[in-house]
Length: 283
Ligand code: 16G
Image 1 (cartoon, rainbow, N blue to C red):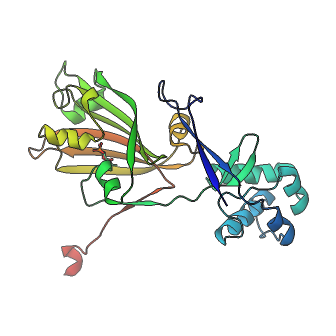
Image 2: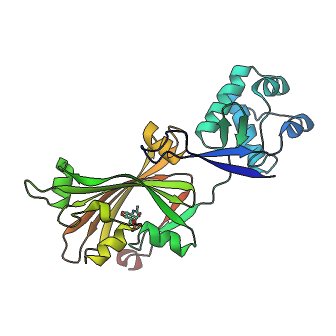
Image 3: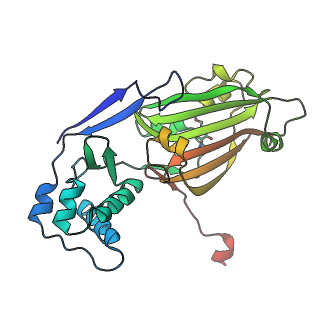
């Protein structure tokens, strides 16, 4: 089975000047063999569309249909399973929203390519570039914004800015190879980062050079469902699971140097924390 990835520059999915879209085209197997060879016995319980959804999930989980395989058309599938087309459409819509299937306009519905998940430790203060280098993964960024602005009220409070101070904002789509993984929107005082345009491939490397690399951070992680703009950038369906991460990072002096709000794809990231028995439990 062969997959082709096309880099399209004609679709305005990224900010102006950065138009790019990964276009997936599978020349995979047609799953109609499976759908005709195997008796489709839907799991019982719940609405029909959920029964069909569970059957397809199970077929993917046991490898009966594989990433890149094309699903039969809505009409063929409805006839085969003996349900209405509306039921098939609803099951497929839910599977697309969950990221298990992808739909390509004009070419059909396919099992989504498998993502290898990235594990990130929560006990080390590292940068995206360092994390990816440790895994031997190529990293790049697409700039979404970098400039000096009047700070928002929470930037003023968190970064400890004085009246009249400006804030440097650096927003990037972070990619490993060609796979978008996260959107990171960092804010630093203009005093720390007077020229945001001078940041190269790594913000932490840049801060290191000016003696402003953070040594400690508090990171808050919460679940979220992707809204339209972020979903488009991360190339996953609107409403898909994501992690919202806020990092407030400190200099050795205790001063806050960085406030970064990020959106990480829920289907590619595992944050891992090592836990130890506390003193209270040992007694
Ligand atoms: C990480 C940090 C982010 C930091 C960035 C610097 C998380 C959730 N976020 O992605 O706060 O700004 O690294 O990376 O870990 P860079 O040096 O590669 O630009």
